[in-house]
Structure formats: C-alpha cells, structure tokens
Length: 171
Image 1 (cartoon, rainbow, N blue to C red):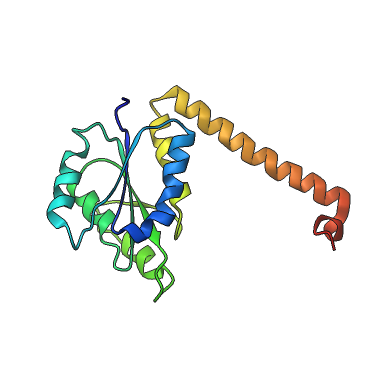
Image 2 (tube, helix red, strand yellow):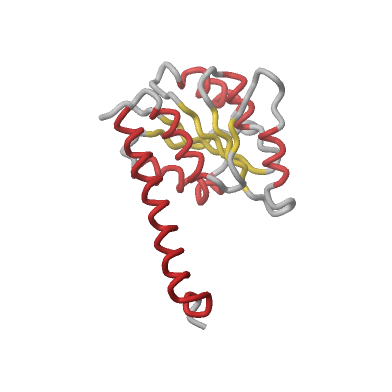
C-alpha cells in the first residue's frame, strides 16, 4: 500500500459532498490520501493528535474543509509546519462568507492557503501542484490536466465562433 501524501479532513460529514471533489482529483492523479472527520470544536484532542502526527505519517499537504466558524484549517495550521489548504464550506446562514473570512484572516505566521467557497477540487489541484515541485510525474500530470482545460476552452471558442451565439445555445 502506498504511503498517503495528502490528508483531506473536514469538520463534519455534511462537508463530504464538497470534499469528495478533492478526493476524486487525488484519485485521478494517483495520489494516495487519507480522508476523515476531525472537528476543531467537538474533537479537539483528535485534532491536535492528527495535526501533530501528520508529518510523521508521511502526509505532505493537508486539505481542511470547514463551514460556519471554520476554525479547523487555522487550528491545524497552528499545530503543524505542513502546508494547509482551507476549503470554506457554504453555510445556510451566510452562504459560506463566514467560513471564507474565518479561514483567510489568519494571523501572521499561521498561513492557510484558501480556495473558493466549496472549492474542494481546486484545493486538491493546489495540493498536486505543491507535491509536483518535487515529483516530476505529478508535475507532468498537472501540465497534461491544464492542457486538457485549455483544449476544452479552445474547442468551445471555435464552436461559438462558427455557429454564433444563437447556434451555440441552440436557440
């Protein structure tokens, strides 16, 4: 079994619908990962242990998703020197703005790279880019992935230019 390089953690199982996107990207890139629930408020001892032992367990990047007060990414970042990527989860009350602000407003010395609200997919891509600094295979996969994105856009642009907006939208 391959050693897990990325941890995907979330404050609640209700975050899984967003964080599964991160897991899928890591699977697409053949990067072994750990996926679990670690609540900053309900399981603080587990959070401290998980963050403190992550590096020893081979983890190189932590993706932490949280909604509402969203303390998990920042607390994890305060407990480890590993890069932490925060994923603000959309909440019902403030549509995720509360989560976003909680994650990005970290004090000096405790950075959390933060992606868009519900941005699990981008968090995993960023994790792959971080790992790709020292892993040529991952780096090449990222380049191929970005080339595929470019080709999709160019194909759509070509279709739009040939058919016009009405034809493109089939109006």
